[in-house]
Amino acid sequence: MSRPANDRLLRALAREPVDRTPVWFMRQAGRYLPEYRATRARAGSFLGLATNPELACEVTLQPLARYPLDAAILFSDILMIPKAMGVGLAFEEGEGPRIARPVRSARDIDALPVPDIGRELRFVTDAVTLIRRELAGRVPLIGFAGSPWTVATYMIEGGGSREFAQAKALLYGDPKALHALLAKLAHATTDYLNAQVVAGAQAVMIFDTWGGILATPAYYEFSLAYMEQVVADLIREHEGRRVPVILFTKGGGAWLERLSATGADALGIDWTMELSAARRDTLGRVALQGNLDPGVLFAPPAAIRAEVARVLENYGRGPGHVFNLGHGIQPGVDPENVAAMVAAVHELSPQYHR
Image (cartoon, rainbow, N blue to C red; front, side):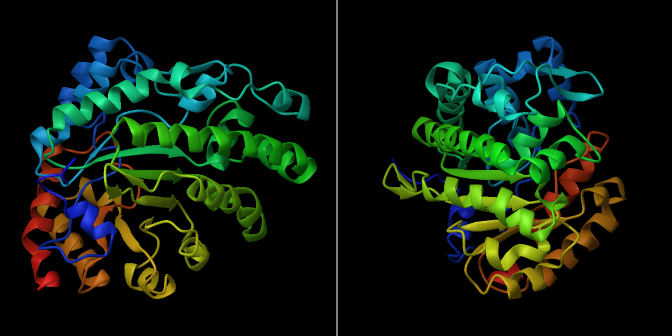
């Protein structure tokens, strides 16, 4: 199959020349959009939306109908693998995910099945196939998964956490059991991402949302090592093209040099680190994605434009930059402010590519 009509993202991820910096943003299909809220109401629940391929396709495409973006990202959730493992995933309004049967011991972990992705998560791959068809080659489609460590924290804690007491108790108290869980998750994550690629995803991203809560030795052993394992086993060529991989550890600025040696094509950078420093630390090995503070989108358009200018200038001249937020867009953002951000990238970035 031919490259998308707009292949800026794929070229930027390969650090090839582009005419302007490509732009997409994490959670671009989400609650800040009134059309998303309407579709979610029709679905009846978040899980009802995420497990319905037609509705997942609909919300994936909504931001592209509103903004001139350079990529679509699959609408799903990082906890689909635990759902497939039968731990009882539910989403409570205003409270986030809940795991009915947390795993906190070697016995719990041994009892976990390795999911059959083709059967248990068929709704995800069906959504990917449908989205690719509906995109009709306009822009590339990004698939994604949570990192083994990040997904493990939810399975151990039973949901989101501030202290990660149960996860860290297992990490330090029974590291062998945690390694067994992470090995199962790494295997499932590899199968899951590869299934998305076969179904039509043209790039994939691994979200390590909670890697940044770890001490450096623990990060290397329990987060980075398993992301390296996943990256090593991914399909990297499909449909006659390279399938780029983006790794994103929120709070991972201290580890960028190590992250750049994983074999990933690009690293996501959060807003706590300057792109100039990230570019220096990654030694030219990878493209960089980021890193506007999501909170900037609550400010007036002139302030948004000024911050977009600062981010672009901080990365500097040359290819290898994908403009994005430093984390997901927040629900209360005015959609017009997002339009101002995208317009600023379009207006201001070409000068860095001449």
